[in-house]
Length: 195
Image 1 (tube, rainbow, N blue to C red):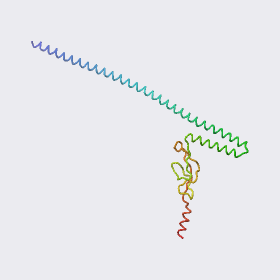
Image 2 (image 1 turned 120 degrees about the vertical axis):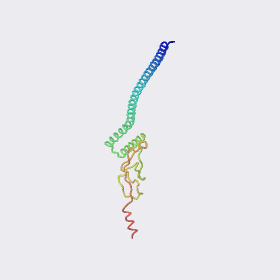
Image 3 (image 1 turned 180 degrees about the vertical axis):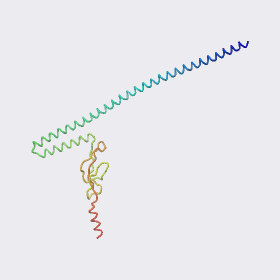
Image 4 (image 1 turned 30 degrees about the vertical axis):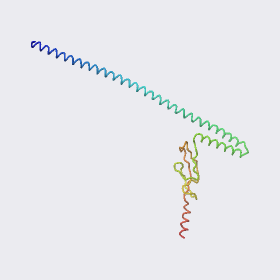
C-alpha cells in the first residue's frame, strides 16, 4: 500500500468518524428536541389542569358563599316566624288593654307572652346569666356601681340589665351593682376600738 492509499484511507476513516460523530450529535439533538417538546406538552397540560382547578375552586367558593347566605336566611326565617307569633300575642294583649276592665287577666296575658318569649329564646340556645347574689365575674358581668352592703365584698347585689349567652358565648354582659365593704361601718369600728 502506498502512501497515498494510506492517506486516502485515513481521510476516509476520519470522514467516517466525523460522519458518525455528526450523526450522533444530530441524533442527540433530535432526542433533546423531542424531550423538550414532550416537556412543553406536559407543562401545557399542567397549566390547563391548573386553570381548570382554579375555575372549579372559584365556582365552589361562590357556591359555598351562596349556600352560607341561604342558611343564614333560613335561620333568620325560623327565628322571625317564632317572633311573629309573639307579636300576634302582644297585639292581642294591646287590644285587651284597650277594651278589658279586668286588669288581672291582662297581667296574666302579659306574663304568658313573656314566658313564651323566654321559651323561644331558650329554643335558640339563648340563656340568661344568673348572677344575683353570686360573686362578681368580669367574664359575664359589667359592674356599673359599687354600693355599700352587708353582703360579702364583690357580691352582685342588683342586676340593672340582664345578660345573656348564646350556646355558652356571652352575647350581652349583665350590668350589675356590686357590694363593697361599708366604709362608714369600718370607721365606726375603728373609733369604737380606740375608746
